[in-house]
Amino acid sequence: MRQIVLDTETTGIDPNAGHRIIEIGCVEVVERQLTGRNYHVYINPDREVEAEAITIHGITNEFLRDKPKFSEVVEEFFEFIDGAELVIHNAAFDVGFMDAEFARLKPVRKTADHCGIVDTLAIARAKHPGQKNNLDALCKRYGVDNSNRELHGALLDAEILADVYLLMTGGQTALSLDAGAGENGGVRGLRRVPENRPRLAVVRATGEEAKAHDEFMAMMEKQVGHTLWGQLDAPE
Image: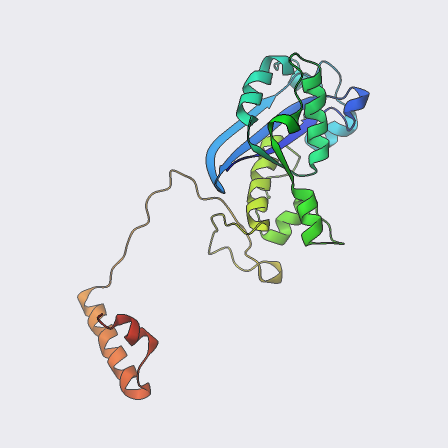
């Protein structure tokens, strides 16, 4: 299955009031594995970004002036998500904005006609009723490192949500094993291992170490009888 973990940033909170998308971030997941393929773009919304929105994501009107308009990026964006299952936190918000953007162009598209939609907020509320289930709270609950998240950003939030989603739905992402125990015994400091990481070295016991091991196991067998390790080491 191909999934796209998606997030947007916008000029305000209501697409019906003419607010627009200004940033899209997408992370590709295939068969529950991060592929390393992302899609990210800033968009000139042809209108002012509200001051309150700027305090949330830090994207200013000046920054967006030379960015492409949605009509200029719609085909490459649609090609990236077409046929995939979209994984979105509070999906109604982002899908509402996407549908409003698609409706301004020809051909008119509706997200749900081309993509499946999974709402991670709904999943979180079902798994953790009565608790905070925003992305920061989920990061803390599942031990996902969001220390770089000072402001909202579509690509960064999509990357973080990908980790949260895989953990929340029973998957696994790479852990830093020396990160220590987190709250409630969880693992703190979860980070994805880069794809270009060097291969792990295989360290084998020396002859002297193997002999010492055999002598120790012989002593254990003599003292307590058959050991599980001895049974595993026994020839077929």
